[in-house]
Image: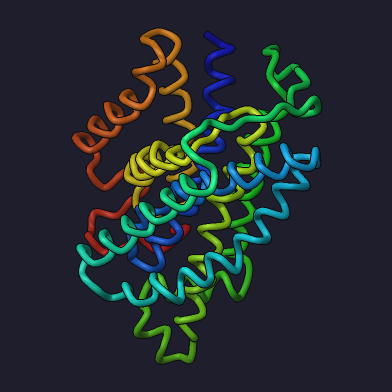
Length: 292
């Protein structure tokens, strides 16, 4: 049981990283990004293709993929997301769902329906974690996820740019009145949230196979985590990700792998019944201030 708990925490750290990017975008921009999981897939696919073709270290290849994702996500913001801001929830859903289908189709045309994976001796090295033998790649993914989440929290609360983003999240009209350029804040938040999803894909690529449809499972789980933690809460997404990782690991071991994602939705329903606003969410329907 102890080894399942450790493995669950390892998985939860990566899920938290994905969910934090999603909750950041929603908490500031009020946009439900249904294409978020596809950026995880692109991070995994890009890293896998580079490593397979060149033999490059996966973390170096992942850094290249992450850097390449920045102009791509900025272009997507300008061409699509910006036009959906302030529109009805239906417009946002169809816009981001359409983007998800487009990215899936592009990956399918480029790489086919095959499943890709690679092996890396460094990432596959076994290390001891609290008495449990774990692949080094999983440890790096867990630690990397936590470090990025903590860094985001520090950025939001400890820097001028981060405080400006929180001000925009609280009241974009007042933020505009005092001279904040909310358009640039929105663009930066979307790029940053997307980068978190790509980074998660990079970190899990050494030990997870990827296909053009991999992103679907990540976006569904991410929405569960965001609701569990409370919309707009970074700490809530972190704790929700760890909780879902543990629940899915135990369910996969005792009930079978086909129950892993289903168990997360069972937890989702229980939390909605007991605390509809999530662990750290507000009772108001207004967006929670990011990091609040």
